Amino acid sequence: MDGIINLKKEAGMTSHDAVFKLRKILQTKKIGHGGTLDPDVVGVLPIAVGKATRLVEFMQDEGKIYEGEVTLGFSTTTEDASGEVLAKTPVLAPLDAKLVDEAIASLTGLITQIPPMYSAVKVNGRKLYEYARTGEAVEKPKRQVAIYSFERTSPIFYENQTARFNFRVRCGKGTYIRTLAVDFGVKLGYASHMSQLTRTSAAGMLLEEALTLDEIAEQVTVGDFSFLQPLELGIGDLVKIDLTKEQAEDVRFGRFIDVNSNETQVAGFFQGKLLAILEKRNKEYKPRKVFL
Image (cartoon, rainbow, N blue to C red; front, side, top):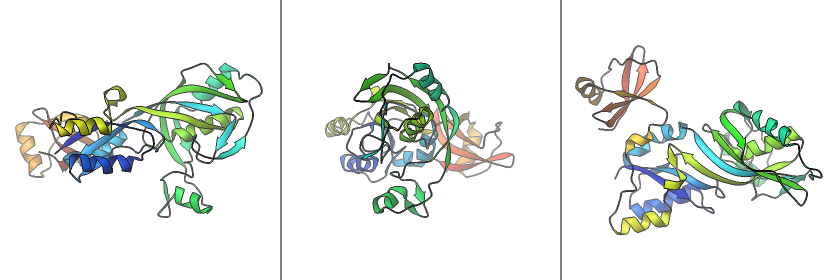
C-alpha cells in the first residue's frame, strides 16, 4: 500500500495519535506525517503511506497556509489558548487599524523566531516541553523562517479589555504561528497569544478536500482506497525533470546521469511517474531515492 492521504486532523489529538490510528485502520505500519500539528490545531495533515514515507522531508518543505485568530490583552504559557495566563496588558482603547496592519507587514519575509517552551524543538537531546514541564531553565535556539504573506482578514473586535482579529498566513517549514502571534503583540506593546488556528493547506493539499479518520475508516470497510493519492504529489517544491528511457535505466541501476539543471536535487519522472529523487554531485546527478 503506497500513497499520500489528505487527512483532516481534528482537535484534541496529536499528529502521532493520527498516525497511530491510521496504522490500525489501514493495517500497515509504514506510515508517517508531513508536518506536525499541535493538538488544538485542526486542518490538513499530509500522511505518507508505504513508499511515500521516503518523501516526507520534501512534503514538509512545501509552503503551508494557516487561518486563525490572535488575541491582544494577555499572553499564555503555551502561546495559545490552552495555556495559563502569563501576563496581562488590558486593551483600554480601540487600536489604530493602520498601525496593526503595519505591525503585521513587518513580520513578513525572512524573520527570526525563538520557538515556544511548549514545543518539540530539541536542545541537548531533550524537547523544550520537557524542560518546561520540570521548570528547568534552558536557552532556546533562534531559527530563521520564511513568512510569504501575513494579513488581517477581519475587523478588530473588542471584548473584556481584549482585542482580537482573524488572520491568514502563508509560510515555510519550521514556522510557529503561535510565536508569530506573540511577536506581533510585542510590536504593538501588548501581551498576546494565538487564540485559534486551522491549517488550510499543506504539501499542495487543501482542507476542503481532506477526510477525517472516521471517513477514511468508512471507505476502508467497503474496500474503497481512492483516498490514497499518488506519490507524485509528495515531491514538494522539487523541480520536475522528465527522463529518457536510457536515463531511466541508468537511474534504476544507480548510475550517474547528465541532467540540464542547476538545482541541488530534482525529481526524476519517467512516463509520467516519479522514478527517483536525484542529487547533484559535481556536474552529474546521482539517484538518492528510487521508487520504480
